[in-house]
Image (cartoon, one colour):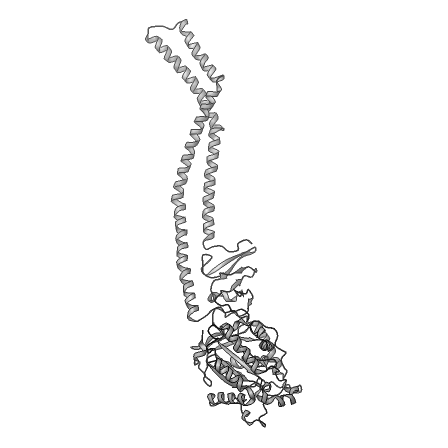
Length: 529
C-alpha cells in the first residue's frame, strides 16, 4: 500500500530536491549540448575551417620566410626560387585535401578541449548558484526540522506525564483482553489505519492523509479532536466505542452474578440513578460515552418505564463506558462489564474474562431466593420470582479461583480489590415470615455501617454464611448492600414505571464515594492501580 502521509516539511524538501535536480539536469543537458556543439557539431566544423585556414596561412608564412631568407643572402627572385615555393604549395594542398586524418584528429582534440572548458565554466557557475541559493535554503529546512523535533518531543513527554499523573492506561474495554498501555489505532475516513497518530516528524499538530480528492488533516492529540476519529484497540484491533478513552483514567468494575439474578435490569437502573447522583454537584457530568450504548440504554429504560421486563443479557464483550467528570472530584471512564450469568457458573468461561486483571471493583449480585433459607418460598413463587438456579457458593468460589489465577500475588494473600455484595430483589423478600429482612429495600439509611451489618446478617441467616466467610477471607475490603431494581413484582397488567431503590449505592461506594456524602471521599482500596 502506498504511503498516505507526508513528513513535516516534506513538500519543502521535495521542492528543494526537485529544483536541485532540475538545475543539475539543466547543467548536464547544457554540457551535453556544448560537447556535441564543439565535438561533432558547428564547433567542430568551425575548428576544421580554422585549421584549414591555419594551414593556408602557415603556407603563405613559410613562403614569405623563404623569400626573406633568399633576400638576406643576396639572392634575387628567379626561376629557381619558384621550385621550393611550388613544393611548399604542393605540400599544403596535399595536407589540406589528401591528408584529412591529421586535420580531423587535431579538430577533435581542439573541440574536446573547448567543450571541457565550457563545462568547467558551467560547473563553476552552478557551484556559485548552489552556494548562494540552495545551501542556505537547505540549511533553513534542516534548522526548521530540528526545531520541530524540539517542539514535538516535549509535547509527547508532557502528554506522557499527563497520562501517568491521571493514571490513564488505554485499558481495552473488551473483557477478554487484559492489555493496557497500548495506544489506540486511529482510522481515517478513507479507512487507512494509523498506529502512531501523535506529534512526530509526520506533523506536530496534525498529520496529513493524502486522498485522491484532497488531503485530510488528522489531529495528533485528543484535545485537538483526535478522539473524534474512529479508533481500534491497539492490542486486539476491535473498535473502541468510548471517546473519553485516553482522556479519563479507566475504572473497570465487573457486575457478577448467576443466571436470572437480575443483572441487566440492575445495570440499566443503576446507570440512570448513578448519573443522577453524580450530576447533583454543579458542573458535574456523568453520561454514557458511546452514542451506540446510549441508544441501547434508552431503549432499555423505555421498556422499564412501561413496566416491561428486559430481554436476557446478550453476548457482549465490551463494557459500558460511563464518563464521569466531577469538579475537584472523580474524573474517570467507568467500565461496567456485564456478562450472561452462565459465564459465572463455569470456571472455563469465567477464566476467559481477562479484564479481571485490571479491576478497580467487583459488584457481586446475589439472588436471595437462590439461598437455602428461601428455597421453599422460591419454589412456591417461581412463576413470578424466576429465581436463579446457580448456587451462590459456586459463584463465589469461581470468583475467588479466578482472582487467584489472574491477579498477581493474590493466590496466597488477601485481595485489595473492593467487593460490593448486593442482595437483589429486596422488594419481593418475605418480610412477614422473616422479620430480619424488613426494611432492606428502604431508600434512607441513616447509619450506612449498621445497614452493612444488617445485610451481612441477612445473608448469613438466609444460609450464605459459608460463602460470606469465604469472601471475607479473600477480600480485605468488602461491603454488603440490598436493593430493588424494579421496586415491585412484574405484572403484565401494570404498565407503570418500575421504581428502583438502592441500586446506585454499591457503585458509588466502589467509585470511592462515602455513603450519604455529596463529595467524593476516596476509599483506600478503591484507588488501587
